[in-house]
Image 1: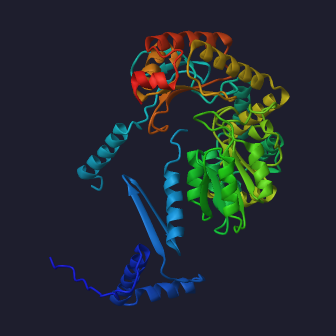
Image 2: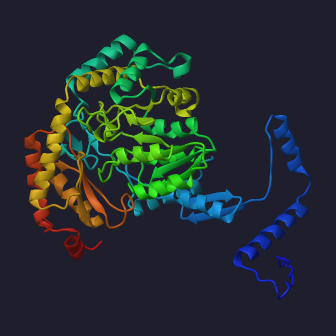
Image 3: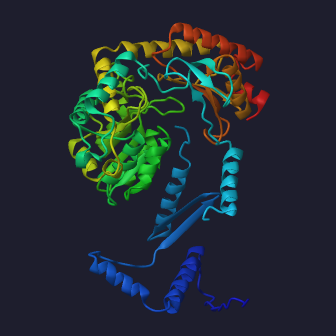
Length: 101
Length: 415
């Protein structure tokens, strides 16, 4: 098994990074990598098919939050982390709904 | 072979985990029509036991009423057994439309659409009338079928703390940018038997330009002075935008449900609600029975009044005997026991005494809120309730819980 390759980037010492900044940098870098590593252009073909079928298609990067507990699993997306987590909280509340008839 | 031993084993383990979680549901076979007294085979293969039924949703005692049974027979003779079609192809009879009109009259709404069940009505209604520009704001204790319906809908989901009007107002303020705000609530909440504060909800809806959705399954036919439902009880008849309810409880107890309310919303359900579009509707025999039920309960409030009397009498008996009872006005009367094992033991002992009740405990109710849920019916006579309280008192004495509140019961049995 090959060791995963990682790269380290030195950040300017003057830069004051919060947790959210670090998450944002990681997510951005992962998105660039997935675009770079994507083999072929299958998605372009699919997008064109959807447009041919009359769909107006847009795409972009969003935050995705997931929560798992036993058999329950929820995931929610949003343009901001607040949006994603607000929605995730609501979805997990739905799981907490009463079980009686 | 697709269903391999490994797959079988996996499913067996799933069932075992349901048992271990205390969620395994076991059916008890009833060898009689649904009524105040029934003959039950439990456990399977055992001798039949005649018991007083305190756990049915047969609120008006109409499940086996002779006039309703006769009307069902007539329906069978005159309109046949099945429709073999969805509504919009060739599955609608004159009596389906007649029942919808009569339900609208009864509920005080503009139009009504029948569904195979209220579960189906709730599963289909939100997706049919709301879009991603809208928001659903639901009480956190609404019925599971509403939750499923909300999940199938693209509108934003939000919730407010149970019956907390301050929290609901905050949510309405927060969502002023949405095209439609729909407040979603049950009329009577099925485990505690408490009623929604519909008058306050309607006031907030007016103030913040919101619609109101009400599932009145545990109220239609008996809550309110003429039994119209929670909206009648709270003085807001005609002000609820969407009502869903069932024919499977007070209104004869067979099956079927409906969406009733603003004409355009009901029409949108007719055009878009998938459980309506893709399944057969209520069978003619049930429609005929339900029409008779509406005739009976519109003619007189006798049964609804008797249910109210029974409820007050039963609450009084339980209180005087020293049981810890959740207060309220509905015929759902929870006897609080807090401890799960205690609730199971008492339900079992009551069954041995000829009283059929069910103990509910975590995870069906929140931890530390185990109880026995008793439900009254107009089919109960005073003698039934007198017999039932004697059994309750005998069992209550055995466990030494009479006259004790939560603190003392928890001190004796733990949570």
